[in-house]
Length: 459
Ligand code: ATP
Ligand code: MG
Image (cartoon, rainbow, N blue to C red):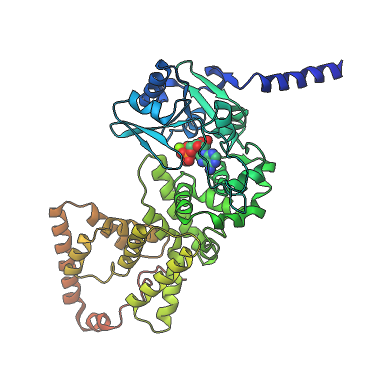
């Protein structure tokens, strides 16, 4: 009796595999068609009218199934770029290695790509570590599913039938919150080491577990991250930090030993007194913004991530007798140099990060002229946000930080009134303070950054 049941079960398993993917109706996946971009639906409809297959694919399907708002909508089809392009009024073929089509609807772009085959193995396609260098062959629908990274990312939504087509049991994994690699995890990480970072990101974002076999090789293969081009690592770092669960991502990265070749300073930052707390505060604010659909600034993020280290080095240099402004420059450069040995932060962001940091030295040495000059700085707003963060971390006085925030939010007239009132209060202070105050004012004002440190939070 029992063996018969098992036989039947096994037969069903294999016949299932032979007869192709599961086609899951709405009750099994729960996607509400109204949540799907009408432009993505349009692209699928047009392709279908012309005799092609077309599905919404990847992150959008995954996110819709778990009730998250997708960032963007991609379409996969068996039509080639040359066949896709003429079907739409505004479409352009992009990409040199693998060509795909951007179908443009006002501000929304539907990235439409042809089913792709998994990369062929062999010396001409991979580097000596197995990393894929060429990946540009068209394939079948099943091949396209097999070359995707995790089962929960290999789902195809057909907006016409409202079915999800699932080759690798991805809906079940997604519902059980399991990040599972398609195929042999080690080989797939070697092909593209960024998949290790992606595993961590999806686990954090979906509150999921990385399945044991998918997790097992990561620690050992982590050094392969070194061979990934810096620009791609930077993009992935940003994705990690802006996925809405940034702190979880960082903790998981450290847990599995992935940060060493990527954000090596993370260990150092976390070991600086209050370092982890500061990053925690910064990322909590970022997560709230991301989940509220608001933009976040990459410069601000990296400025926050590395700040405690800069701060510590800056303080040390000042204690050795350095000039406050110059030592801040030196501390900033040393931290940025060290970080960029592993993962280069893009140049345009570096300029902003430095600007945000350097303005921190100017907030409490103010007279009216300096205030107006500060207001003209392009990164003034970000620097004030950063100051708020430092106040929240009890590094600077919160009343002072709030004053600057109010100033940033004020209308031009209100700003004039605020600066006037500030000047008047200073004059008043001076007049009322008499000789004692005057003498005190002439003393060296403070150590940089520590002048407003509240009692008990000295570092
Ligand atoms: P999100 O856009 O939320 O970051 P996503 O899953 O859409 O997540 P993308 O980078 O936009 O991620 O990629 C779209 C799809 O392409 C993925 O869902 C996955 O199927 C596939 N994919 C992306 N990167 C890889 C990779 N490195 N290896 C294999 N498949 C990948
Ligand atoms: Mg995506």
